[in-house]
Image (cartoon, rainbow, N blue to C red; front, side):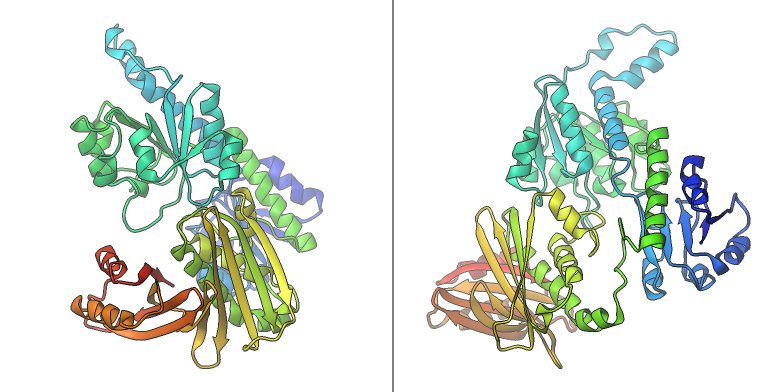
Length: 527
């Protein structure tokens, strides 16, 4: 085997390959054309953040089977091109969790006691004791946004300081939270109660999670710690809030643009800032490197896949059988996530027909990826089951030979703390993925685009009123599917996205639909 290491790794990591008798080529800052040459007969490539892997580089490596990123982010790898060329991409998520949590807690302590300002003043010859009266952590409330590995490590450290801990994470079960002695709250409730807020989630959308509106819901003395993603916070809004006394201060390790330029936050004495170093410890760097090398070794030697960030390789037979159903499974998971607001406890997946045969692990993975959406960082079909396990979500797979009305069918039930939701889907030859059942009611509808899901009592006039209401708001209906069952009726309305633009279903429209007589539930779903 030949392994190319494009960016520096500690000797403890590279020796793992040499002990196997494999050839190791270390680029050591040589020009890019030399890397292309060395990859011509390479089996594996290991990089950090300095080397960019694009399609051209992949095309120069016909034997390459795996790319490993010694770190978490894979922004410098063209994942789509790697998948197209059949190259597995892996990273080392969570290995530096303790380092990040310790740095976050260091920022928390520093904000509580104004350590940087006091240090700078003393070194400047000043003795300003009264100016730096701090606060104790004992008895204060730490709000943790994102209760993954790093968030859980923060909670454990807070308990050592006799702090009360609260958290927001829609994919953590009550049982996991109780085991951590942390109270789960909605995000706005957390903001209202927390003395300190520490962020440990991925970027979840186009808008910052902490914008001006959310910052206004925080206590005026709150200290906000961010070691996750700079885009989680509207930096202008945060600077305004601190200057106006509506937020106490912040400890920041990440920024919207890195390095930050002309950033008003950095000039504020209430802000402590570090240059994205939360994961930069000797221990973490070595552990990340060793874990990355071990992943490459295990894959090339035994085919074992860990920490993958793109789709797994399938045999030709399995690929032919499963591939058409991957999109269906993912959309069913996304559909469930959007019609359920309660915390998940169990996800049950049942296969009918031809799907009842063979290994369907990929379908479990893509269902979970759809369920998690953008809320869970780095969720892929390979690591999704492990991420669900971390969050206390039980996965139950089953198969049935019972004949149904479709050649193959996927049935998914999401059990939550408030009940269950149940959807089924099938593939139609010309129409693609279709929804065929919602919460026990048979309904045949397209599983794509923007859908309005309505549950109502089965009585006359509901369809007409909903149609007229949408028409008054300038929304064009593409399809209107209706199903009826003993418990009532279910409608799935697909909204037309053709020009002219403007077919946006706001929460005000949904509220108006729920005010129609006989309508019990309405929600927008995008798949």
